[in-house]
Amino acid sequence: MIMSNFIFGRYLPGNSWIHKMSPQAKLLISFFFVLVIFLANNLISYAMLIVLILATIVLSGISISFFIKGIRPLLWLIIFTVLLQILFSSGGTPIFKWGIFSITDQSLINGGYIFIRFLLIIMMSTVLMLTTSPLALADGIQTLLKPLKRLHFPVDTLALMLSIALRFVPTLMDETQTIMNAQRARGVDFGSGSIKHRIKVAVPLLIPLFTGAITHAENLSTAMEARGFTDSEHRSKYRIYKWQKRDTISFLVYILVAVLVILVRK
Amino acid sequence: MKNIIEVKNISFKYPEQSEIFKDLSFEIKRGEWTAIIGQNGSGKSTIAKLIDGLYQPMSGEIFVDDLLVNEENINKIHKKIGLVFQNPDDQFVGATVEDDVAFGLENQLMSTDEMHTIVEKSLKSVNMWEYRERVPESLSGGQKQRVAIAGIIALAPQIIILDESTSMLDPLGRKDIIDLIYRLKQELNLTVISITHDIDEAALADRIMILNQGQLVEATDPNDMFSNEDKLLELGLDVPYTVKLMDALRQQGLDVPHRYMDEGELVKWITQLK
Image (cartoon, rainbow over all chains, first blue to last red; front, side):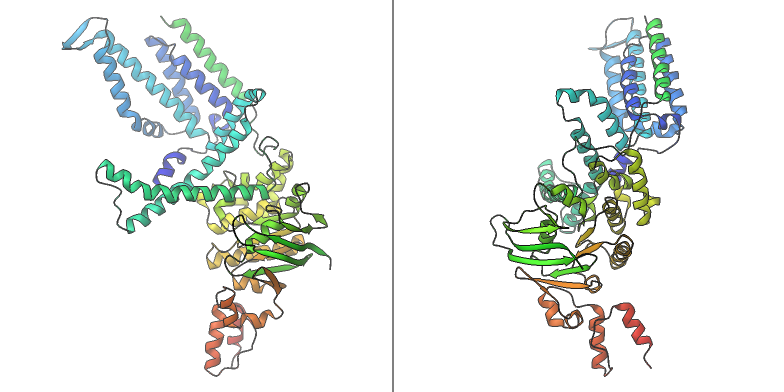
């Protein structure tokens, strides 16, 4: 249950401007924003991006505490990268030197910028995840990949596979839990022991899980066939996410900020 | 009444196994509720899959609504028959309740507006409309089966086959689903085939067929069969609780009628005793 919450509990339904945007627009803007982050290289340009992301967060109507929670799992990675940047980058006036380590004013500033970059990317992806259901995300990816259809890339099949895979994650998580409990009742200890021991106890967990998954797949395909499924390219869509006016407006705001960033950068 | 399903001299075997059916024939009449019972491994579920064209018989023919079940007619056959399977999780294709009901309609290339109307109507008829945005893991087994039924009636079939659809549910969930099918059968004029282990479900049927050693035999006297413990055990069915109670009452010297009664009937009968 905890594991399934980790993946799915992140989506918070709502009615904000951001929630109502189409998933393909949100995905596009997120990619665009990440690109713009790498263009920023001075205080003013970073400040503008921070203001932009804060405005986005406010518009999403989601409490800031959820964003802080989003950072926590990545905290060590951020600290490690920032420390590497501070300790090993060259140039600037040295402040402190010890063996191969040196801290300069420039490396401190670079470390700060890296920290802000991390923060901005995490904030943006958190906004995307919190305001878009997994299903809508799969749909957005499908829409964005549409042009690949001309190259005979099976976009619709991929989208259907993705949505079925997402739908079965909690089911398989529950089954994992059941199997673990069943093995624990037989005296298996999953929590401790050497690496060799832990790999050994994973086998009686994985085999029933795999056979279960194969049975699910077989039954599901029969059920799909019985309900008239032939192939995924000849189907209509129940949910349609149209590109709306608000998507265009949001994108224009982001483009405007991107232009400003380019103008003020060194 | 006209036959809606005609099975003519079919035989079938799974690869590397001995023949399950040899020269099997039977008919099912339009608007009837037929229960098919039999031991584990007797091929009950295989019958459902053969009728729906999911498996092909080695020889013989099956007609559904005067249409021969073959490769060519398969889409029309799937439209006429709705199958409700055993495991609630293994037939939930959509990410949410409404997406799942829409799955079959999407396969028909139906327009989005029309789909929304039908999904709403189908979910309301199984009382699951309030749950339309729910994900499958937040539903009980019985609720998932309701959604599966909604997804099937959305396709407006003439026949519903319950392939042990209630066997993974608790007693209350079972009764709930059977009551629902009973109501839908009346409202939509359906033909129902229930493949089952559940004696109460079988008792509801207009006709009971017993699958024994690859042959279907009609139970001539269901009342007699249900009250015959040895026969039930032979068929791999559990002796119903009410039958056990009736036996015990008889031993106490009470004059219990020799016919099958479900719990409600038996309670009613007991309360009428003086």
